[in-house]
Length: 83
Image (spheres, rainbow, N blue to C red):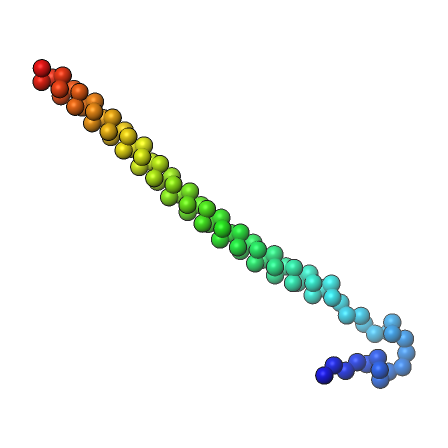
């Protein structure tokens, strides 16, 4: 149960310290900001890991094409030497 000093003590209402909701609001906003920042960092980590996987796949494709071209060139050389 909430008890107030206003009802029991005579005097002006301006003599009592007002409730400071701004401080609580700032703290709540800071907590929300921290959670959003953590979510953003997690999202960026997922994006970065996806980019790393894609980069590995691209290099695998490049080396596969280079190996295929080198194999064809070697086959042409061997075929040309056999004649």
